[in-house]
Amino acid sequence: MKAIDSLDWPRIEADLDRDGWALVRQLLDPRECAALADLYGEQARFRSRIRMANHGYGQGEYQYFDYPLPPLVATLRTRLYPRLAPLANLWHERLGLEGSFPAEHADFLEHCHAAGQLRPTPLLLRYVEGDYNCLHQDLYGEQVFPLQLAVLLSEPGRDFEGGEFVITEQRPRMQSRVQVVPLGLGDGVLFAVNFRPAQGLRGYHRVRLRHGVSQLRGGRRHTLGVIFHDAL
Ligand SMILES: O=C(O)CCC(=O)C(=O)O
Ligand SMILES: [Fe+2]
Image (cartoon, rainbow, N blue to C red; front, side, top):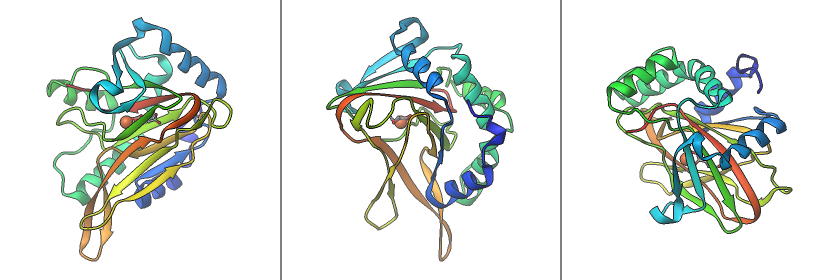
């Protein structure tokens, strides 16, 4: 794993501010990606398995990790959070949303737990040919940390075809805009869970983001998702 403090934070913050998402190239190395993808078969690591087709979420499946999280996942969550919390607070201020985020993840989790959001949300997703993930938002209760991470654990063109990570922006009174995030093996994307603030003529307004995955044309694709709030 790349050292979180060594990442180019001014660039990441500028990208998040401008687009609502930011790429982090080679956040995990290929060995770490393979090891995480291999965990998918270890039932005891997970609290639940979701088959997307059963819920109208798309096609494919994912599993939520149980506590204790695998060390790499726990480390990503606790180290990224303090770097993102100041931006989360700035966004909340600009959006006129209630509440502020504490500096450390452990303290934010206490807020989640006090609100009854006790269950871990980091997850592994698995797609095969024909699978896709409908546009969605990972909201699991009132407590929402406004940024999340996804890491591609497979290599486009070698392990799978298609399966692009996409983000749409629903702007007030305008048609939606879509962006394709060009993820490679081990690349992470930090992105807005719900709203991002966009600057207009009269201050900031809310732009709602959704994310999803286009249909796989072949192969197999694994992703790690790291969400900072816990779930009801
Ligand atoms: O498989 C993907 O790239 C999307 C993952 C996702 O929806 C998430 O991490 O929340
Ligand atoms: Fe998601």
